[in-house]
Image 1 (tube, rainbow, N blue to C red):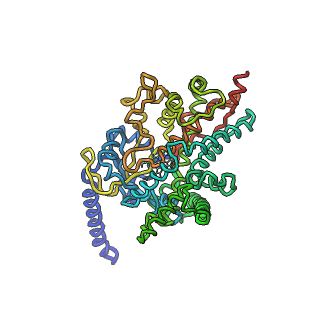
Image 2: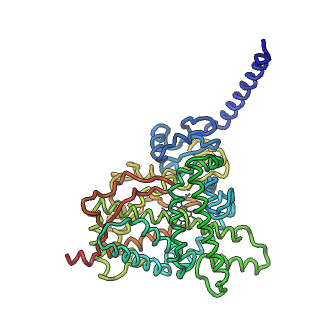
Image 3: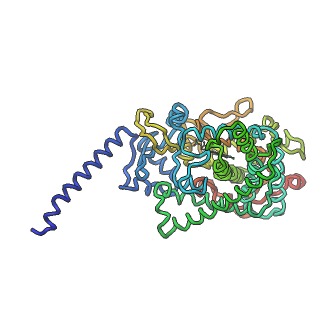
Length: 508
Ligand code: HEM
């Protein structure tokens, strides 16, 4: 018997003990967690999520029910796959499920620093709560949901109409125009109404942001396996591009903060940055140390969050609105009829007109329901172990809320796959939002920009419709509703439209 054979026995025994230990540990770890598919060692189910994870979730939901789980690397992921499961977690156990799954890519995009935890999107604890409170208060004070901001937004709507008219009825890609208009609206809130929208570096930041957003899904394995970025190939290339774009964006934001330091006046609050400075001055004035939440890094990370998914999501929602109008011309006709009946010709549409335009409001809601712009929401995490619908959810699991499953559920919506804005109208013609409609999510981490987003969506959409007719280019079919590019956001496939001024149309 050679030395090799002598050593083999103890080695096999060691391996056997190791696998018994891992199996026992796994068994204990998995005790009573929601059912779900097996993955492969080390990677878990990650390689099987496919290019459209929400389709995978829908398939798994049929097999495992409204709550199921799998491993992403070594971390348990739990999918809440219907209204009951989502409300049981995000509303009934709101505090427990108020964490963010975080992850390498998410934190880098916000801060430009690896593994940093600044900003509103931080995993949990008091930082995000105070950050949210300050943000909501500041947005409210600066005019979110009121008329103060609407001047800037209406100006953007008019600018958009002028740009569309410059194409003189010829086809163009609407997304970059909508994206810039929304960025200018959000920019007015962050950097003041006078900030230089035409600054070429701002345009570059927006392009970089769109690229980074489109890479988000491909790069998602890096959330769990950051070392993948060192491997030559698609991860590395896209990661390098993302790093360059993030640096450019943060440089722009830092430049804005620096400029504000110079022009800041105690007597004035022009925007979010000024409000932040006021709070810093107030704390320093009271002799206290500046808490981490009001340090400059936090300000930069928060501005980074506004200029991230939030802004893109609003532009993507408007782009989906055009896709639906091209596919449902009768809806566009009815919008125009409502505008003609309720708004004087040549008048801009203002926030106070909302009640007069229930159909326009209903169309925006139906777009939010069917467009499915945030397929996986931003994953949450549970701050401690809990029991949900009879299942044990170990602390710090990744929580995915599949709102698409809610929006497509025939038990909640009549003909859910049909685009029918009237489902949001009550019998008396006013707008009605059922409680299972939650495009901005639920609970303690629900979208902090909801009122701002609703305000921008209404003012831009209604004013565009007031002035333009949107058509597909002659001889071209409307963009397909079923095809989309899925990343962090879910966007329509690139398409082109023709825009004709309504005044001209009425004269034809
Ligand atoms: C149509 C437009 C928008 C949609 C559909 C949308 C949707 C969402 C959703 C679903 C979440 C995740 C909530 C959760 O985890 O439960 C979220 C989070 C967030 N949104 Fe929005 N959003 C939009 C626009 C905006 C805008 C305009 C801003 C700000 C300028 C914004 C700022 C944020 C922030 C900061 C968070 C993270 C909140 C936190 O972690 O506590 N969003 N949004």
